Image (cartoon, rainbow, N blue to C red):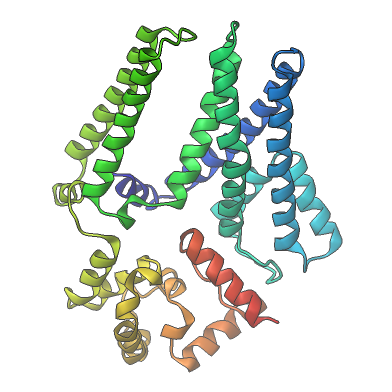
Length: 355
């Protein structure tokens, strides 16, 4: 389900920008809300320890994001490094990185260690591990045991949970499993929610009313079920089988290349990370090397700059690759983004090659 949504959104500039800036906005609001809650917790002797733990979490997140900003820009002039570090301290770095990705500004001067997409994704990982998850757990516990529960405290918890969910969803695609397992995973997740409510109420805890917990859990499940059913009913009929199919991403990529005869559909294999079709690597390389000159002469509509940017260097004839690099700014052609893992590998490869 998530993969289909991301596929549809990726087809438009609006969808791309909505994903980027929604994630960046959540990151900024999450950090601001955590700072606000720290101030609130420091004002009470009962919650001062919670504030200290939250301070440590925010400090760790900022430290690793500062390190990442330095690592990415360490080859650039010191003024640029100082500016990037200032973006982190001012809590606006997620928005800056999102804007760079939306503009396609990928290491335009050739000096960055990672491209903006990889930097944004790794930054979100640091934020999720060191700030969002710990803060959500700590603040939830404080919210439950506290006699006075403010609306702002609940909002802060919700923002932390949304930030964690968004970051995790963008770094791990359900299609890497298969639709049937993904649906099973979703159902077991909700089952654990109901089990947690049952255990909490059966043990005699009275911090939160049992009726409110059951209504909340049921409402969330009903909203998810309605959204899931609506998506199944509104997607293209040929996509519906993906919701319960046992076909994985590797099997799907293999079928795209081997079960199609026309070049355009076979080249769609480059829409996936190479690790997903590694067993077919030699066949794909032989296919592109044998047909590259013909495609350049015939100029089919699908063989455009966007397609060429998705093809790794080793799948391009040496002479054609030299021509592409020669025409590119900085002497190194730009590759389109391949997700977090692909972006990191490609950025590190370029950095190593430039040494």
